[in-house]
Length: 195
Image 1: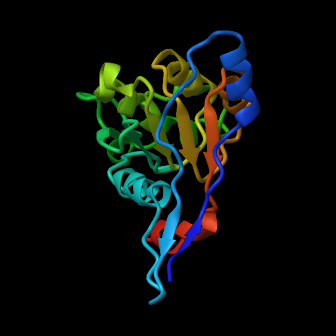
Image 2: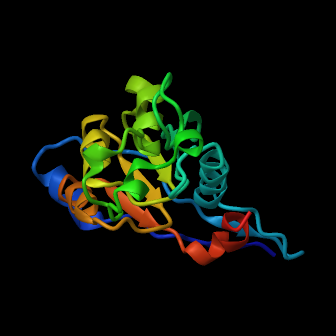
């Protein structure tokens, strides 16, 4: 006996609105049904599979405050790029010189221009180039407003994340533009996040 479980997509209303207005309806990787066999084996679904990879990517981060990972996946399930947060090439990393934001007591989500780091989502989009079009981005955190604008211009169709950012204006931008958002349960990744 085999059971199938269906996982819901993002904001269907926004997709229908865009379709009615004649806009291109974003594709992105669709959530899939999970197959459970009569022996109890549950094959991991693609959202959890790709988020686990994004968590591994975050371990390359050189940020001393928060390690973020992101990957861009095509609408047919191929990984096109990865990205993690840290200083640009040629600049000493914060783990070597210390965090300027910590030194100045700047709270998370404010005065982003003070930090020299490139966000994980930005690095993933830079690496993907035009391959980001119609893709799904998996990020260990919801994109900030700057990353959200870059995601919109790259024409990413869907964003999957597990944790919030201090400024949720990026979420509103993505919703307004019809990008499908899926938040995965952080508890599903608790053991992996503690490593």
